[in-house]
Length: 122
Image (cartoon, rainbow, N blue to C red; front, side):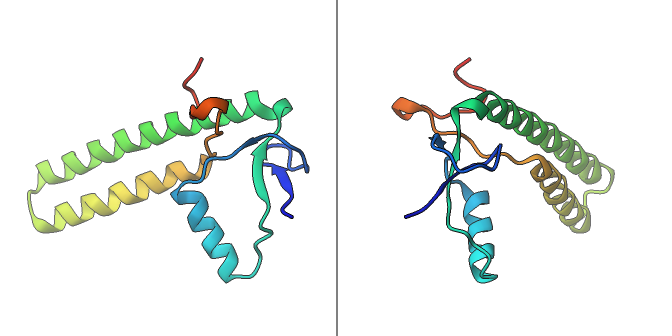
């Protein structure tokens, strides 16, 4: 049987499940290939739910900011020199900028009743 581990306090507790997404799936695949996966069920305990919502809100804000900066960088590079190289360099910059936002990644919490967690619902 899998253990339920809170992603905030790192203790074995019951709580709201974490929504699977592409980031978690990628991390799980990497951990399975490296044979370091613990195969726990990731949850957020009731005590840590406010902290989890704030961390998710901060991640979403950061992602939006980096995406805006990446878009501005792309437009600026292409406007200065509309060549294939500048388009390629702009796309590379966009990918790097979006990867910066993953430093603060925090998964979304599944809410009861099928609603998704995060900054919505306040």
